[in-house]
Image (cartoon, rainbow, N blue to C red; front, top):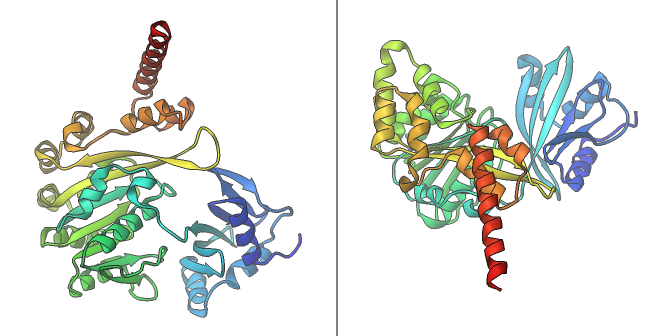
Length: 370
């Protein structure tokens, strides 16, 4: 195939509006456009092609790490296009890579599609906020938007720990220190422990991956810091359960009590194709820690949490099904995609059909009055 330069491919993908570029041996360069994988250019990449495209984009230390550890997370700045988060790894002996585009600017929480509750959390002085969802569901964007909101509205010291740094923040009214795993710190756990010595008010944790990071984050939230962290889980009970289960059985009750006291809430994210085409739209599930949720976490009755979210509208909570129904009524997503992401697909379908009947009845009554 024609020899492509990585920058050329990234520019082409950005011009198409793609969110990701994939380089895989034996396949043409591929892009993810509106959630769907499509060819970006013709001709298959050979193992030599993918190796050249990836290795030429790395610094010397990054090359060594990829060769030694067989995988690498990194960031790449492209003049005039922006930043990309890269992941390279070995697959069947060949180097493969994914590059995700990071927007120049982060929208505010409302424009991203979030509840006003997240703005309220940004005003909190202490506690733990979890932003959860599967890979590629916009967790980093939400955390960056929350950080931006805090930096604009408050005069605080914000320390972020990321792998790699994606959105580069300006200080605003706040002091903003961004540390990258691999170049500024060896691990999330060690960086987080060190962050507590940096006089922080707000700590951002790119991902809670291990027990040490989880324990330090919870302790930081308990001791007067606002901690915002991401996790790869599909709902609030799973996030809470993963944290508790990460600890030895003899320590789980103590961790559950710590978490019940320090957790402000969980927002879980899902990105769905817009019904009119041209991009993705956010659906969320939001849990805030009221007395009922706190008791469930402390007693590890996590299976009861979805029911408490469902009846927790007065405390700002909503289920993913509530969010999906709202988007369906506004004609922003289609029913098939909504049901694929629903906790209770039949409930979503029935409530949507009821809403349509009510709308039609109101329209017909309006005609009769005319």
